[in-house]
Amino acid sequence: MIPANLIQNTAAFYLKSMENKKRISIYLVVIIVLPLALISLPFISINITFQSRGVIRPKSTNHSIRSHSHAHVKKVSIEENKLVKKGDTLLVLELDKLENQITLNQNKFKEVKAFISDLTELTQTKYNCKVNTLLYQKELQEYREKLQGLKIKESHFKYEFNTSKNLYEKGVISNTEKLKTEYDYNSVSSEITNLKNNQLSKWQNLLQGYLQDTTSTQSELSQLKKELNETIVIASISGTIVNYMGIKEGGFVNSGEVIAEISPNENLIVECYVSPKEIGYLKEKMIVNFQVDAYNYNQWGLAKGKVIEIFNDVSIINDQPVFRVRCKLITKQMQLKNGFAGQLKKGMTLTGRFKVTERTLWQLLYDGMDDWLNPKINDEL
Image (cartoon, rainbow, N blue to C red):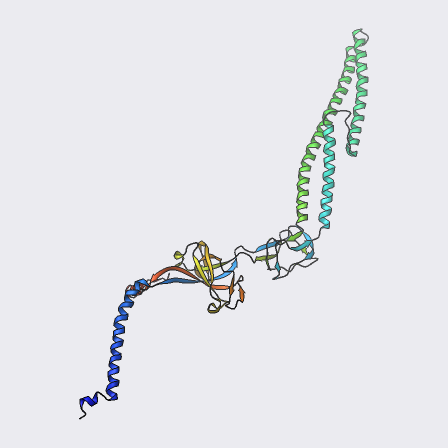
């Protein structure tokens, strides 16, 4: 047998003693660390987030480019996917026919105004009035000639009536003869009165008609001038031409016809689609991080935004009910560490990470145990 003092000095004994000490150290570490970890669980917090898919899009919808009149196309400055700025000329329509129509209406308006001036003068019942248009100069002359002829007859019949009246009083003629001359005199006097009244009524009716014509002609002239201004179609906003219908120079467009659309490049927002079970966590002005599919977040990082609008009504997308949530983009472009920048463009897809709350590790452990112990809720409809 090997003496005990020699066994303690062997290598095997040394290795066995070191292994025992290592086990004791591990046990001590576990005994110390585990209680410390359990104690620290209520004091360590992490962010709780949920994710939803989304897309970058303009805040406003596409603007339609329309023709406001029936006309031939003189010049086209529209191409699919072309960038345009607000105020750029997109389409020029033929002006000749419209300008001719405006000239005709202007001449008609001037003529009607001249007629109104003459008729206003004629309805003042002044015999010696002065008119300027040939139409009413001729009409006034004819009226004066008729009136003058009747007045001559009236003067003649008046003389005969006065003569017969004197002769009747002297007993030279009978009452029948006197009454005949009186009737002739009264008849021509009535004819003069009727001529004056009828002519005045005619002129007054014409005056009212022309006054109405000026209103309609002026309105039509204003509309034609408006259409003349609209023969040059300009871009109402800055953006990209989409859905171009292929109108060519020399072609014809109808009033109200949609020629193309402008998709805005400004005021880009993110529209996320949040499931009904998570919509209750969101509120306006909540900060959200975006993981853009086109930019690897390990290299480019995350874009930042803020919730600006939560739709109240549910939408159906891919047969799934979702709520549309609009977010303002705080980050305007992505950037690498070397300074290279990547633009955020409409149509880019992304994942929104919404921070719901902060939870301690102890609360998460409790939530996990609660999920294990309590029956699972069936979320199927």
